[in-house]
Length: 65
Image (cartoon, rainbow, N blue to C red; front, side, top):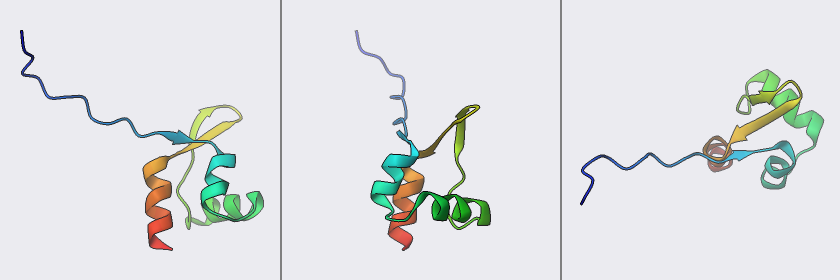
């Protein structure tokens, strides 16, 4: 039996700050200032003290630099 439904869209991986900073070589304070100023993508809150960023947003940021 075959399924005629559309495949699920790809899931965008979430990156925590240490992984983001390996791709964008700046310090933590500079990163957070850039997020606050709108230069860098906004974080997705996963919990009260946990933030992450979409890998696709970070890839777009790197491509624009």
